[in-house]
Image (cartoon, rainbow, N blue to C red; front, side):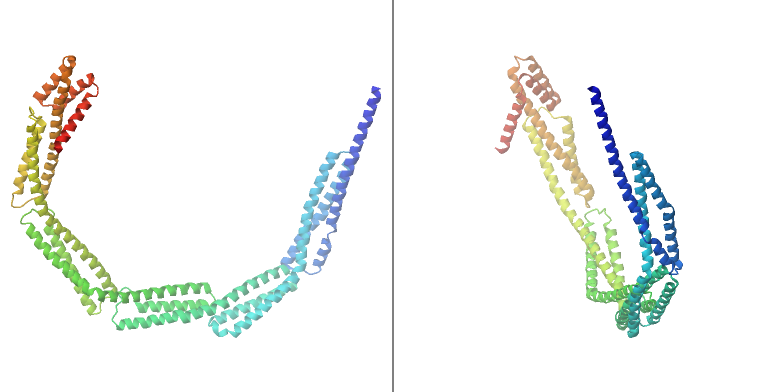
Length: 573
């Protein structure tokens, strides 16, 4: 039974293998047939017939070279590529017959790749050959259009020849060159060099576009010269003539020379137009426009400057007289103030410098006034000077005003310092009474030294204030020192009184602990010793307050609050 099953399995397996082989064989044979059909289609493309047709056209030049290049490519395909494809297909069939499907598939793929590559090349060759065949027909069609345009261009040129000026001759030469290109096209076409003829047509097209552009621009440029620039030049000439008659002066520029230069540039532009060099002509005309605008600006600036000068001449002279008068007043004021005060900021020198500057400006104004009367100076120069003079006069006037204000302030400073000295003396007396009020056993050495030094400084400053001529710089410096010392003394006085009073308050509060806490007794003794013998009230307060805090935390702060409250109440009641 087992043997029978084994035989059945062998039969089934054999049938399966056979069926698979049949299926793969048919499948790959179908692929080979399809590839063979593709190859046959490629070989059926009428490239050889096209080559034969082109050969009979008697091609020359670039067209012939192109023909020969494609012919060599086609020969390579027919001699090598097609046989290679055929060999690959035959080899694939043989592998399939031997049931070597894997190798057959590889060779089939190689054949397919060769066919695809060959198809691309065949299509390219056929397309190129068709272009060669069609090139003559296309060239003739393009030629007809270009010749129509040419005829129209020549007709328009003759009809409007008057509007092209000297450029007419150059334009006619360009038309003659186009005729030569047409003749060259016919020669190349007759010789069979259609590709080269195509390039000539392209050149003709380009030259005709350029010609049409030139024909459009030349009349515009010539009209621009005649109606814009020539008229502006004439306007400049007439304007300059009128200004000369009205005695205008131009020292930085020669208007006639500039106008002549502009006319030369216009002629250069005309020459470029005559040569149909329109880009260069445009550059020259742009230059003309800029130079004309510059001349207009110069002439208009002189006209505006004249109006400014005559409008401000009286104002400038009036302003100068005002500042001169102010200078004389400042000089008198400096002399007067110097009788009572020492002037240490070169006031006399500064006033003299102001006077010298004003004298120079006065001479300059007189010079320009005379020069204008004699028509020897441009108004723009005078205008520029007037503007500088007005700025200078305003600056001098401000400086002189500041100087007078500084001098006037000396008297105010003197009065303020005298009043301040009275206040300082009163402050010292009040400090002394405050100290005496509390019957302190004594005062710290540093405090006494500062107090008496401040008193001496006040006395010395009074002596300086009683001199015939006061040195306010020295007096102000001394006054500032006294002011700082008095302020410091006021703070120290309050600190001494506060520390002394607080020490007494702390001791009074600590007395309740003297018997129960020996350290309080010791602290009170040390505090009183510093209080009564060395007058170090701050250290005395620190000792007793520290001891009190040990036995009654927060007591020191409460004593301070009570003292501050009583102190505040005493200030208001």
